[in-house]
Amino acid sequence: MYLDHFSVQNYRNLKQIDTHFDPNVNIFIGKNAQGKTNLLEAVYFLALTRSHRTSSDKELIHFGDEFANVRGQVHKSQVVLDLRALITKKGKKVWINRVEQAKLSKYVGQLNAILFSPEDLDLIKGAPSLRRRFMDQEFGQINAEYLYFASKYRQVLIQKNNYLKQLAKGEAKDQIFLDVLSDQLAGIAAEVISRRFKFLKYLSHSASLAYQEISLAGEKLTLTYHPSVAGINADDSTESIYQKVLANYQKNKQTEIRKGTTLSGPHRDDLEFKLDGKNAHLYASQGQQRSIALSIKLAEISLVHHLSGEYPVLLLDDVMSELDHDRQSALLNYIHGKTQTFITTTDLEGISWEIIKQPKIYHIDSGKISLEKES
Ligand SMILES: Nc1ncnc2c1ncn2[C@@H]1O[C@H](COP(=O)(O)OP(=O)(O)OP(=O)(O)O)[C@@H](O)[C@H]1O
Image 1 (cartoon, helix red, strand yellow):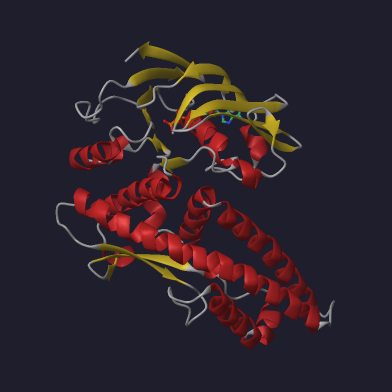
Image 2 (tube, rainbow, N blue to C red):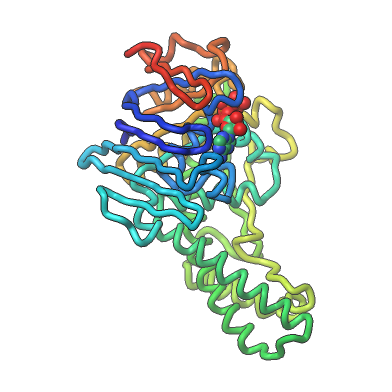
């Protein structure tokens, strides 16, 4: 798939943009704070109806304005879609082919976007919450059911935690209501966990292949999912995961009441990256971590293609300068001719131009873009 006609009004410092992107490579060159990330964020928002940088949509509206609007024409192999997202201070609305969509879950997934930014390098060594957010964002955009269950899980978890706090303070007494909430939460947790296992199995396999292409040393990369409820494994059915999560909630019921919070479930799970069986969090060098992060992104591209038959668009925010020549070559060769790619950079130094064939080059200055030359 690729994004052709693209227009923006009042998105952060991008007051007004109206352009047609190149189906292959688009490069945005600009000094710091000119709007390069904002532009990629606007594309990401059009795809996922959320920013990768903030959970507050209001921040996305240009200072002093009332709304932000992003619109794009997406070409897929069988169909052309007109997508539109409108952000106001009261909320957001989305349209597919001018028809307003009541549910965001019906909209998300029409345009798939994989974003790679320097922060992704923290995925390996950063806090477990980063890896959970990674799973929720990436699996949510490729699978509407995952998106639904992950957000339902968050809702019911808040409800259960609020009730646990009331019980802890003695403001509530009815433990049967707690059992009802735990049962509901365990059912949704099982749906989330079984899908995480399924997608991670594929991701691990293709990330391992990608890592082998990128790293000259040839170590084997594996991804392992660690559910916080002991005893759950990849071969378990959803029903059996549900039984194990529920049994765990029951076992820890009094501790959860005392602490006023739910101690296990998808919100406490983690993901482990290993190189030749060794935990990359503890042992991988900076360079190996870059290769792992890059391999995961390449594997995501392949996962989207595997599930939807379409390649996602790839947003590379300021990462080219972070990658050495060999890793840039591996990345660009991998995506060549498959994915529409958007690259931001402050300068042209350090980019392996010989690998990028006929890009469309834009300059970006104070939120305005201008085309350098047609490819
Ligand atoms: N809601 C908003 N309204 C207007 N301007 C905004 C808004 N939010 C952010 N900005 C401006 O956007 C600019 C930052 O843009 P962006 O993050 O895209 O920079 P960049 O070109 O990617 O720079 P760098 O190379 O440093 O990452 C800043 O000048 C900031 O003040």
